[in-house]
Amino acid sequence: MKPVVTIQPFNVDADYSAGDVLLDVIIRAGIPIASYCGGRGTCGKCVVELRSGAVEARPGMPVGAAVEASAGQSQRVLACSVRVLRNCSIAIPGGSIDTSLQTQTEHADVRKFTSANPVVEFRTVSPPAPDLQDPRSDAERLTAQLMIEHGVEVRSIDALVLRKLSQTLRSNLWNVGVTLYQHEIVDVGSPQQTPLVVAVDIGTTTCAIYLLGCNNGAQLAVAGVTNPQTPYGADVVSRISRVVEAPELAATLRAMLVEQLNAVIGRLCAQSGVTAERIACAVFVGNTAMHHLFLGLGVEQLVNSPYVATLSREYFVKAREIGLSVGPGAWACCLPIVAGYVGSDHVAMLLACGARQQRGNVLYIDMGTNTEMCLATTESLFVVSTPSGPAFEGAHIQLGMRAEAGAIDACSIDEQGSFVYSTIGGQKPRGLCGSGILDAIAAAFGAGIIDWRGRLQNCRQVKEVSGQRRLVIVAADDTDEDSEVFLTQADIREFQLAKGAISAGIAVLAQCAGIELHDITRVVLAGAFGSHIDSGNALRLGIIPVPQDIQIEQVGNAAGAGACMAAVDAATSDSVQAICREIQYVELVTAAAFKSIYARATYLGNRFAQRGER
Image 1 (tube, rainbow, N blue to C red):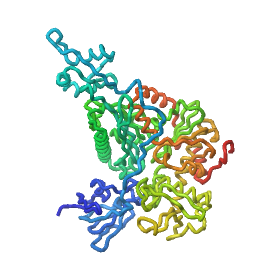
Image 2 (image 1 turned 90 degrees about the vertical axis):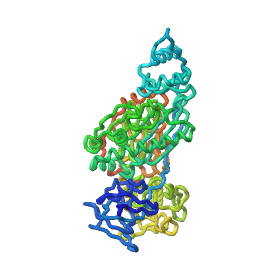
Image 3 (image 1 turned 135 degrees about the vertical axis):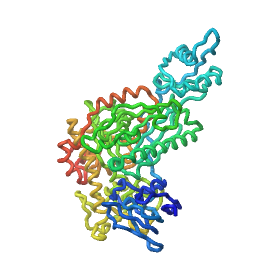
Image 4 (image 1 turned 180 degrees about the vertical axis):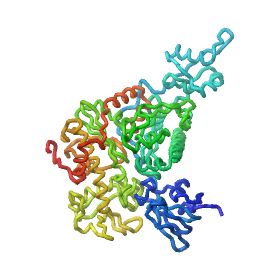
């Protein structure tokens, strides 16, 4: 009998070898199962129903030695906690299916992409046909004519382009369009086929891909997709830890990402009526972990002190060398990273927001799976990173989920003391995403249901089940699975830890900059989470510990905007280097003030009533 695991409701028969972890079998089959902790058995999201067959516990996992099931006697297990012993039939309940995310691709119009100095140049040229009096090589006459007609110096020609050069010149009757990247000819073809560029923001949870015109920066198409690596860990530490435990997984994760990027780029080109072969340059940004996994660099040192990157400078590589299906001579450029987990996405965000040109003390916060913050003063750019994202994205919350259909994304408490909420897609609630968690806690805090220490008070919205106190937000009758949507006391504490990390990080930045928190004049929120939250609630809870009348601007995916700028405007290269020179990276692990501030920072509330109060 062929070894298979039958997976319902997808009706998929997945191959396995005896001893394979059930979660890995499901992921290899392409099933979108929720798994935020990287298969460590801590998030509890990958619940499956074992209908028949047998599995055994992985060593150290919280499940019995062996679990068997037969028709009519199903068992619920965590897919990451068991290994397959023999053919199984499983069902994945709705709450364990990772549905489509609400992905942030929009960005504020923080900077125009149009440039008089494009990264990719396109020139039409008509070199003279050879004859016995002019026997110069095809390459020589083409490069000479580019200098004569356009004053363009050519220093090299891509090898693949060179192989087809003679045929291309003659088939186009010596009138061609030439695409250049940093003085290299990367394509020669029809004079009507203008080149394109791609900008990609590789997030831990989602990826944003932009297809642009190379001269005018016109956005032809855009897509936001889930990072296919997420089943191997929702946060960077979980994902890297999986790779450290199983080094061969690094190649798998890279291949998954490249395959998805190629598919999305192909889809965007089809939507725009162009071919991917016209793409001459692709610019990538992401945090340090995503940068390293994408390039196939070692990551073990990123989880061990002093958390050193393999490479930090701007990196150029032929796109074909990293598996991208774009133009024949196209280049890929990864913008520079800073240090620790502060990567090129943060640099791109600062570029798009014009951080070096701002006046006053401006706080930039890029909230996502990891939260990076920059305090820009007249003296310098002080940058820090805090591991806060998983709680805000639902990974450490019992009924937390990412921003997908059925997630409560906003809520408040009405005059009768009842929760009023909205869900993504207008569906019945299944759980809470980050913005919904923040709103629920802010509403309960404002109503006195939760005190400043984060403790649930005795009131009708709070009940105790199996010794666990919970804040009921939605009654069972109103949910998708006939079970209450709630936050436990432990969930609230998890939120406080994340809130405290951000708040304390901001306080440390202010100390490093030599200013008081009330001296901050403006706050800029970027990233998927930062763009969807109620900024007023973030102030009231003290996540952002600044005066409550401060100006807050939510700019969307500014990292994506910065990547677009770098793909279109050659002048941004100097701006990027200037930003990196001015950045002073603050390592919280060694910041003496962080530990003393952190405990107090976990308390709920904002100590600033208005500007000027301390």
